Length: 131
Length: 393
Image (tube, each protein chain N blue to C red):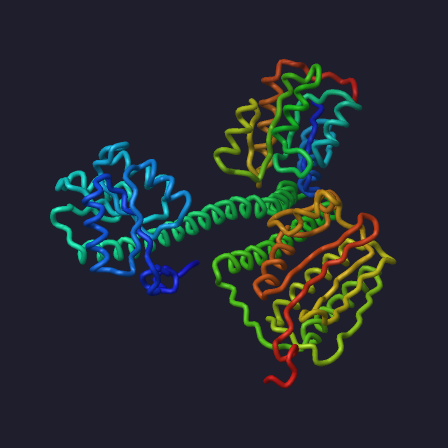
């Protein structure tokens, strides 16, 4: 079981993604914006993985990932972008940060496979403190 | 788009029978004098100013407007096409005719490729030929400039369309993500609790409605962009525009537990407007007002004629618009982060459509808002001339 941060400004999508990940047996913390995500991580400790929307009003997902990785211990935070932006340059920008880039609408198995692959790749073993 | 074939876009001085100012760049005083004499006889409406080098010609062009430049290529401060390039660069709107001693097809073609309107050989040019070349050069340059402007407009339009399609694709995918995702949840688990499945289907249905609203708004925006959404303005009584919107708002307010104040307009205030579309705009504004006003608040619709215009006010005592968002609310696809977070439905297109529709009718739309106190949109439309001048028609 890993601790997964999910950020999406659309409440229905946020609930859907969180529901899927919880059903797969992970702990989820769901927040609806970039600022809130930064505050949550500062208050409640590091996640093992982040699933991030890209287009959000307060802070875009790419910037958010860079800010999260600026935290001590989160330099190598694995991330999956889940975005309705599907232009090649958008996908390239996400992959340039070493993240997996999935487009919306998404199929649940694709998301869950990407989560498993990212967690396996990540050298940091999941810990249980914090959440 | 501008109709480039229309003669009204080609106001050359010659066509208007006015004096045409020619800058002659020629270092030989004798030949310059000869040109002046020839032109005076063939085309007395031309007034010729002479300069003997490129630097002097540039100075003349920066201080004064000319209709045409005639230039030699063998000038002391710039030989060959170098000088011509400099003149074309410093006065890109000016037609340039090369008048040179050198009969060389290759250079002639090169000169025309680099912006000259014509290439004439001195030994074979008389006053009539030169006067005609000048007048054609002015005309050709004017058409070329018009074409360039037209091309710029087409390119800008294509860029806007490309951005629009990318944004539209993004906006359409968001409700589709919920529709497909929640239906997938139901399909994946046939033994799920029926109550839970019903909840998923409800989310999918709500997002289908959102998708439909978006598709309709996108079609309207596209119609506005491409001119396929013709407005039919006519002289119409202001009450015909306001009353249907008031009816709709009455119902919405009752559902939302918000009070509605409508002050019917006096009879006989006639505006020039497309009544159906203007009513739609008011309905959109009233719908927003209700959406952002908590129960026990109030929404109002009132109108008055002032300074030749009908001013229609849609106000509410709702949550207001944050000052940061005010400059963006009429932009396409802009949604207040506040509204997004609170899951207030909306496409981000309604206000941009409202603004386009009202401005297309020579009207205006403005907003005033205080967070926590409320928001007021004011739509103004021109009154008909009959209104301003009773009895004139």
